[in-house]
Length: 113
Length: 113
Image 1 (cartoon, each protein chain N blue to C red):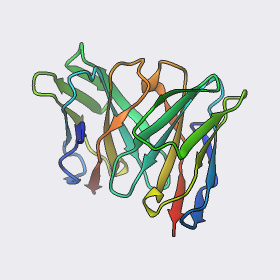
Image 2 (image 1 turned 120 degrees about the horizontal axis):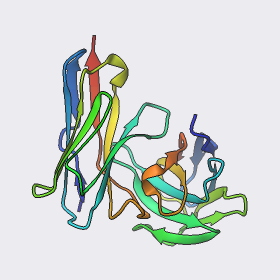
Image 3 (image 1 turned 45 degrees about the vertical axis):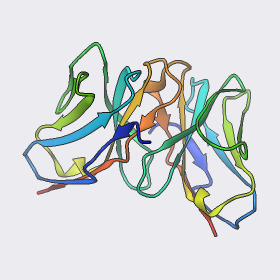
């Protein structure tokens, strides 16, 4: 068991709405990364948080935002949902500067209708 | 433009035989490479990694080969077992201390008994 938990596991939202996804990192890990995996694609890096600050961002618009809390858990917020935002959202926790030692959660399946 | 490419969407192998999964990359800055395995309804699980200073890394039944001049790596599984049936993702980073993992689209391996 990796210890990284994500909630909810499944979610259906309407286009234009806002969504918040949650991630509890593995004990001892201080860094959280978020990835989007569309159907038939590999995971795509959204951003990473370390010490409650964004520590790197992929090619995603500003309506994708995040938070990290003092206990290192994290949220991913997506505003103005679009149909193409339908995907599996994966959270990965690690220590900083240890990208190769990241543990992934099981993901949240978001469907936008 | 895809920086990490897995050109074979699927591979079928008989139990006991060798499975060879291939991956190509285009970014010369990539310095660290990983393979992840993903079962349905689970997050990706780290399998094996290799740094660019090596051309081979072995862990039990799993061996990764890196050919830097060809920008190519491969994962060998010997012998293949039915429990190896999963989606395999190749990923790359600019260093082991990097921030983001860049994933390929994945190869679905089916091992039949």
